[in-house]
Length: 282
Image 1 (cartoon, rainbow, N blue to C red):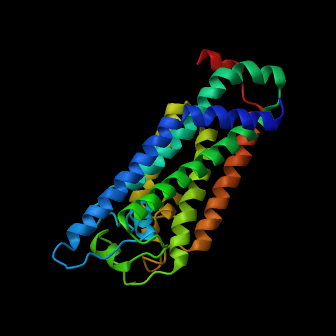
Image 2 (cartoon, rainbow, N blue to C red):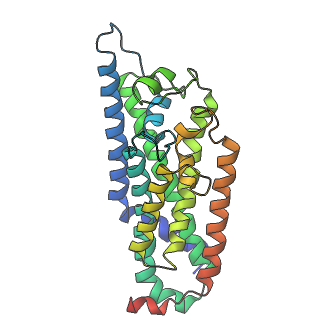
Image 3 (cartoon, rainbow, N blue to C red):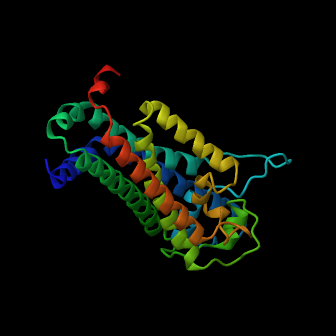
């Protein structure tokens, strides 16, 4: 079975099997948009004119996360629910199809065709396509919401909203377009790397445990601020544009590239010697 046929099979069956998981991601995004719109209206209820939000504001509200937390202080840690649910639903979507396909068709086909490289590469590419489709869906929902509600369909992020509505104390009042570009790209790149990393973990431990490891990893990334927990860099509120001394675009791109490369290499090497037949007894 050639690589092209495997990819075509994965696209056709993978997206069909994951339609409800994509729907749940879209629902989270829509709820986030409605929540921001209501909070914005309530914040300026005594004003004659409520300032219009932008496409960038809504994306920032969804993916911004929380500022750097400092354990051991009087500061209260608040889980960034929208950010956490969005990323965990993304990972669950890629995990469900890849593992299900490996445990069903893979047990029959791989020992016969022996094309492990093509099989693994097809699954990695499907993960990439799924993540890109999910982000495109999320951005599309935000854009349509802005059009329907009369908000501004621009990438500009309003500093006043970050302070008053998102509760982030930042010395900056104006944000360059590069900040918005970072919000659109960096989380997506890390999501691709994380989905491949999760797929690799399923080659070492059971899928449910692999998902649990990633869940804990995300929570630790929100709680601690360290380069070794790169999930922290998926939060726009921890970047240099919002927090003085925060991570830079170059740092985030480098880290995302390393995660992608390591996941691909380790996964390829492990899958070459992976015992497919023993999956039947698990």
